[in-house]
Length: 72
Image 1 (tube, rainbow, N blue to C red):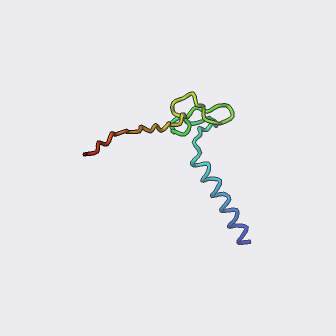
Image 2 (cartoon, one colour; image 1 turned 120 degrees about the horizontal axis):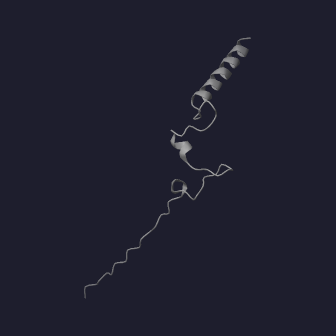
């Protein structure tokens, strides 16, 4: 009986915790005050690469060539 009560209590706590941190409004739409919800997504949920916020930053490497003069 104690196990059942503890399990039910944990289930209620887990449910209320996830509902508390959900970033949606009461009507179920995204709350745009959060950075996570401001990212434009495609219909399938993947990031839309047309927008600057979703593009990956390319790392460019610059090779420095220096001429070494040997003293004769």
